[in-house]
Amino acid sequence: MKKQIRKIGFAAGALLLLASCQKMSKPDMGSFPEDSNPPGGPLAFYVAFDGTTTNPLMNAVDSIRANFAADNPLASVDGIKGKAVKGENKKFVKYAKPNDWAKNAKSFTISFWYKSNGQTKNNTGTNGPEYIMSFKSSNGHWSGAQALIFLEGDNTACAIKTMFVDKNNGDAWFTWEGGNQIAGMMNDAWHHIALVYNATTSVMTCYLDGAARPTTGNWGTHGNLNMDESKITEMRIGSGPSNSIDTDDWLASTFKGSIDQIRMYTTALTATEVSSLFTGKL
Image: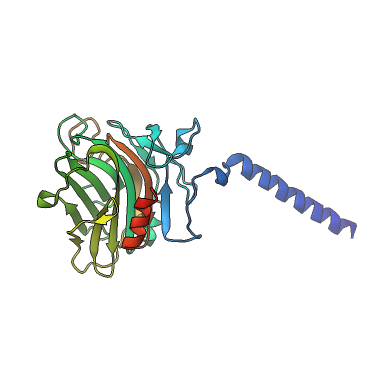
């Protein structure tokens, strides 16, 4: 009996020591911005940039998996709700992966807020795209990426351009450009964009400030996104995938405005759900 009591006491002490070590090595989850999402739910990646610490990596933590940024050189500014990050030429936020989003997404939704003023510029200061997000990849695709999302234009007419690459290097561009460019997007005010891809129809819908754009993008009969998560080598917020940062390479351009509330879902949100993100400033 005494031996059993000693064993129980030893096990309890070990558990307490282990718990103590875990608390010392990992920040309290309660300090992270939280969102309503059950374990394994559709929201796979979420960064609110709401941290107010002196640690820029903690300020850019993904709240779904406590996934800290590998690098965050961007300044913290007032966002649509709480804080945001202010883009800067040749600088961007890096993550190793978008958690398991690329592995599990068939249909998907990518939602974000941005604020920008005037003409988009490349890294040498001439007109060019500015990236919200990209997935750098070792897949051998000509772009060096598996996903691109960027804006290009000015407040009179701005394009929204996206590209996604599947595991066979088949790609699709979903763009709102040319006659579908949008006025009033670069007026130094916060705007919400949600990109919703429905694998059942192979159609992408773009929502701007809660309202669906009248045109949609189509990937033929492609169906599921079918992305190769293992080939993603870096997720970038605020930059294209190229390392040619000191050139006018359009694939290296960085975002000069502000970015807030990055959400990545493994489902196609409904129009009502997108509207809720916009009205709730989420």
